[in-house]
Length: 357
Image (cartoon, rainbow, N blue to C red):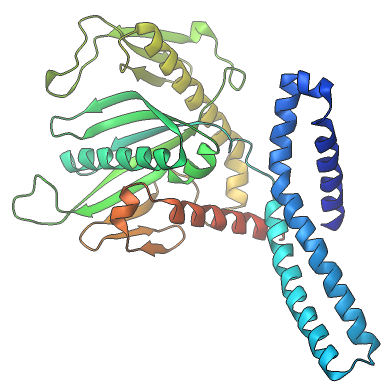
């Protein structure tokens, strides 16, 4: 590990010098790429320098104790320095091992989120709306931008399904663990007798793909236009501005009806299509690895129940890591980081354990 850290520090210093070079500054593509690498290496180097300081103080204290001849008061002080820095070295070592794990190359991408009502009919559709609200409020707290791509609303104010785009720093890194089945236990607005119902929605989080990530043959696409529709007859366009795209080789279907412009709807739908095909490509590439190493936070299978939202008890439980919080209201208002960060830590710990096997 020390050798790898030394190489990383040399690379960090090399990039730091290049970022002051006028030729690099004038080359925006190179400058942007170096800044991205510099940003990724900074937390590793900051931790490594803390580690080196603690290691030097630990080694010095150990030498003094081994040499002997210390008076009582000075020996107690050196012993305290030894114990403190021994603990720091162990802590920094573990933290550096996590930081050195290969980073998910998609972590910095924007995402497309799909929410679909599942078991529970109208109540599931209402909860899909609650989930959409939760994610958009979380995005607002992060300073991210969101835009709806496609929505199929119900007359009661829910969504049979809704797809939206999230743009922001590390959006995929934060949201990628949300794919799966989310179960809700609450008294529905439609329940006259106050009985608790259980329903579910399915969430899929896709890293937003670029054209360079997936090759699409235009001849493989079938475009259909139709009039957009809304709940209760509202916001219905008289022109066929809504777009549906079918990728014939895979059968993947995407659609968008949120914009009045057919061109804008087509652009959004194509973004979703690229992302769906990119996700399928990633899943195919990772299937063998997933069989060999099942990470603790789950397989990412969208049919897997991952979280339960119990409204009567104000309880949210993530089943993958066994975490339960009694703060459901604030969680549904976008205060999700405690769970999201715990999932990321569990994932890193599992990958670290796998790398040490």
